Amino acid sequence: MNGPGDRLDSLKLGITKRYGNKTVLDNLELDIRKGEFVTFLGPSGCGKSTALSIVAGLIAATEGEIRLNGARVDHLPPEKRAFGMVFQNYALFPHMTVFDNVSFGLTLKPLSKEEIKKRTDAMLKLVQLTGYEERYPGQLSGGQQQRVAIARALVLHPRLMLFDEPLSNLDAKLRVEMRAEIKQIHAALGLTSIYVTHDQAEALSLSDRIVLLRNGVLMQSGTPQEIHDRPKNVFVADFMGFRNFFKVRIASVSNGIAEGVGDGIRIRARAGADVRVDTDMVMAIRPDDIRAGGEVVSGAEDVSGRVEVVEYLGREQEAAIRINDNTRVWLRTAEAIRTADTIGLQFPIDKVVLLPAE
Ligand SMILES: Nc1ncnc2c1ncn2[C@@H]1O[C@H](COP(=O)(O)OP(=O)(O)O)[C@@H](O)[C@H]1O
Ligand SMILES: [Mg+2]
Image (cartoon, rainbow, N blue to C red; front, side, top):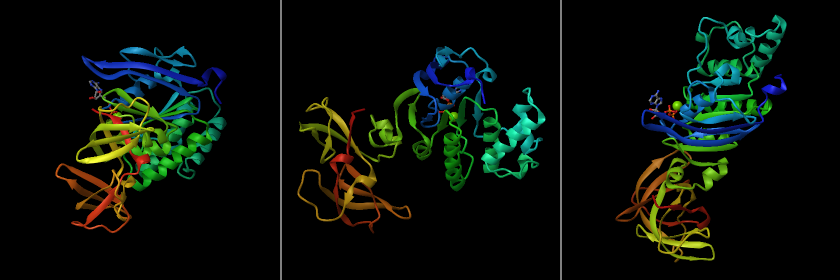
């Protein structure tokens, strides 16, 4: 393995990147600990690849610094940082066999032939490519090529792995399989990883921590559960699959429960100590958290409406229900539901999140 000087105990970023007068990363601050799997998540163009490339040393930050175990590394060229990189477009050497692709980095080091073969074979086994040593990249599927790219980076025992949308070119089924493999390898080798994706399901399933970016600004950083269940603003909630947003004015707050009125409905949510009566806020709920059907109990948060659209999703359906002239509610349910049905809806108080007005 690496000598003690090559370890990663912590990585600390504080970086700003501008192109001309356009700020593409606005003081992105982050502290990564040994063994963590951190994901940069956000829509296309939000600055994920820029941030990763700055960590890798492929581009320079305009301002700020990167500290590895407390010491600055932002002046070091990529090879001196000893980080591994895997990109969306594999970037394999097409004229070299699988074995030669994976062992390439090792041949540049003072290692014996036997040692190189031993380490390459072990890595090929780990990514389940034993038996493919003599093939060329053009003779492999996309998933196999990406496994070669991962093995090529891992064989050098990088102290940090950087992945930039490594699964984006694969079909949906393979993406899910490879996702599990990456997670397994990260754990098995005790890696520290930064992973870039625009796919929220991928981020949720892989990460210890998700860093959600919008236009180069950190929107929220937290565990998958925190980001999924407790988004801090409308952008994060929208990105993470909340589909119902109600603009409300807070009518009352008592016993930690706020009641909002607006968009023709009345809805309640748990509220922190800072929520004040008469402020404008947004209340949001996921389609699959709304309860439907049954009897409409007379309660403030019960509404009913007419089904306008049904999207068939296989196991479930997602339906748009018009509850008044201005407002439709999206409901996800496994129950049979048809256009023009009238349906009662309840918003469970623990599933409603309270967000600042935009
Ligand atoms: N070399 C460059 N010159 C000018 N603008 C750039 C350059 N590289 C990236 N950008 C801009 O920076 C922003 C972030 O890009 P990028 O990091 O590639 O986003 P993401 O990976 O999240 O899709 C985008 O608006 C992009 O157009
Ligand atoms: Mg990108």
